[in-house]
Structures are given as C-alpha cells and as structure tokens.
Image (cartoon, rainbow, N blue to C red; front, side, top):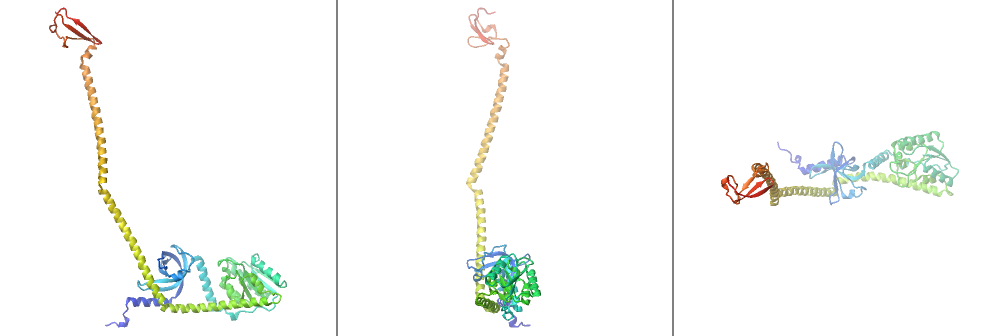
Length: 445
C-alpha cells in the first residue's frame, strides 16, 4: 500500500510545524526557575538552561531583549522570566525564547501584579463608565490609613490650610503587612455601614513594591469597587501605581494631592482642574491597558510569521557552533597539554643527566662502602699487629732480662752460648735489665 505523498514529512517540515503548534497553543508564559549553563558569546545573545529539582529547559534571550535586564545573570540564581515556547529547528529541541527577566523575589511580585491587573481589567473593574463623580459639596472626608504615618499628617495639614470647615474622620488601619489588606477592607466596609462621610480617601506614603503590596490585593479591589461611598486612592508617590489606583473612582498621585482634590481653594478652579486631570490620567491608563492587550495579541500572531525569528534561529545556530568550537579547542588544548606533560616525563626518565645523577649516586655509595671497608681492614690489621706484638713481647729476650737474666755478646754481636765462643782478651758486653756491662776475658774454663 502506497503512502500518500502529502503524509510523508521531512524532518525540517516536522520541526517547523511543531514550532508553530507550540507557539500557537502555549504562547507567552511566565517561568520561575534556577539558571545554569549560562553563556554570553560575542554576538550579544544569551543562552542558558532554566531548571528545578526534576526538569530543565533550554532558553535563549536575544540581544534586543537582554539589554533591558538590569542585572547580570549568574549560574545558581533564581529568576522569573517571561517568554514564548518555541522549537530550535536545526536540533529539534524545544526551548523558551525569553523576553524579560527579573530576580525571583521582585519578579514574582511584578508578575502577580500584572496578572491581577489583567484579570480585573477583563472583569470591568477599571472601566471609566463605572467611576462615580465626587460630591459637589464635600463636608466630611473619611481617611482610611495608619493614624501614626506621615500621610495623615500631610492630609490634615493641607485640609487645614485649604478648607478648615471640612470634618475628617479617620478609620485607622495598618497599611503594610500580612493582614493589612483585610484591615483596609474592614475599614471601608465600616465607613459604608456608618454612612457618615461624603467621600473616602484610601491612602499611605511611598515605599517599595513590597511595601505597597497590601493595595494590590484582589479582595481590596472588589471592596473599593463595591463601595457605596466614592473612593479616592492616593497611595505612594506619583510614580507608584497600585491596583487600588486603577479601581478607585479617582486616583491622586500623593496623599497631599488627594487632600487638595477633596478640598476647595478660593475660587475652586484648581480643584476642578486637578479632578479633571486625575480622571484624564485614569482614562488614559485604562486605554493604555486595553491597547496593551491588543498589541500583545497582534505581536503573538505576528511572531508566527516574523522573519526576525528565523534570523534569530540562524544566529543561535552560529553561536552554538562557536561555543562548540571553543569547547572543542579547549578539550584539544587540554589533551595536547597532557600529552606534552607525558612526553616530558618520559624524556626526563631517559635523559643522560638523569643517568649521570644515578651513577653519581652509585659512585658515592661505592666510595662510602670502600672507605668503610678500608677502615674495617685497617682496624683488623691494627688489631692483628697488636696481637703479634704482644706475642713477640712474650718471647722477647728483653722479657727474659726483666726477670733477672742477662745476655752476653761478643765484640761482633754474637751471643756467647759456650766458653769456647770466647778467648782470653776478648771484650764482652753483658746486657742486663736496665743497662749493660763491658768486660774483658781473662780466663776461659
């Protein structure tokens, strides 16, 4: 049975379609993992592996994206990345093309903030047509904040300066910590139950993303949205944006600015201008958020056909070959170094100098043995000579003389053993123990 031609894939076609399938189905994802095998070749692209305790995935972050990263990645570092699943077709490996990278701690908060913002925007909590106008004649302001913070002092100072007739009711609550979001919700609900103020100002001073995190709570967002009393959010500094700023009826950039929005000046023009400016900013932010979602959708569709992706794949292939070449060169260099060391050791073992050193050591050893043998031989000869001398001393005539005997010699030195050895007139020498006596023979008998 013949297989239809259209059902026979090439490897290139298969990898290409798998890439389009993965990119189309999964799209952009967030990933929290640990960096390993980080490499930054001369092209400016980054290649790394992200892993947890059980699995790993290869990743690429191209130069246009990694230039926005504010830190230098390192092996073992925990990071939060956003990217698109793709396939590196030349090798058939699936990988993550990273678009942004943050340290895990800050990055996780930022990712949670973005995810919640997208969710609440989709639910309509940020829609401008749901925003309630502020009362025309504000007599009582409810302030939901910490009673000991700098924000409440700034607010009271501004209100006293601009309109001292406005009554302020403080609904005390912690504005930072684990239970702060729930306490803020309780304070807003309490104000709605009492219904004693015209408007609520939910506020605190500036701080880090972690410090302001209580105002990025989903429960607090719904509480503000469902409040029967109009809510003004004035959290942090002008550059800080929290979820409560998006969902509130009006956003003020600072606590002082919130107090100015809710109080009247001499002709009330500044108040109206500030309110209109705040609403304009809020509407613009909502419009930006909506367009951002549309742009992300279009970008995702465009990426499937983007020639830049194909170019990046070729660049990645080139970088991979360059890294493999460097690794091969290092391996070859290491092998040659080991071989050279081995040959040097073998040459050193066969070197004449080495043999000369061994022979010199052997000569020194033999010389020492010869000297020891000569010393031993000399000592033995001395001992033998002393023994013979002792034996000679034992049979020596001198030893006999020491016992009281004497020896008589003729003039020519012969020992007189018999009277016939002498004649009258001969001169004889008699050797005694401690001297000698000379005598003349006068009679022989």
